[in-house]
Image: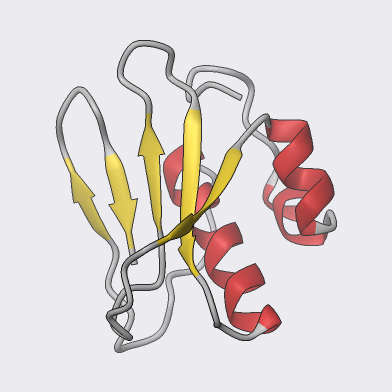
Length: 102
């Protein structure tokens, strides 16, 4: 899915099994080599195509992986969802290639 494509509803984003959601949205999911425990993942918008790449650290619990992936996708797609509790911080880097990192 490109950022400019139709975005899913918050209910669909939160209720659809993550592998199905990733496939529906056409998101590329990759393992991150970042081992810092404070890094939870990032969504990278490909500058030329608008395609989304979700990169997540390995070795995290299924619940953490699922929750963070959905939250990052919501942020990248502009789907309104409640914010994450402290100490989680989302950083948006404004540029032609936008990255949302937790």
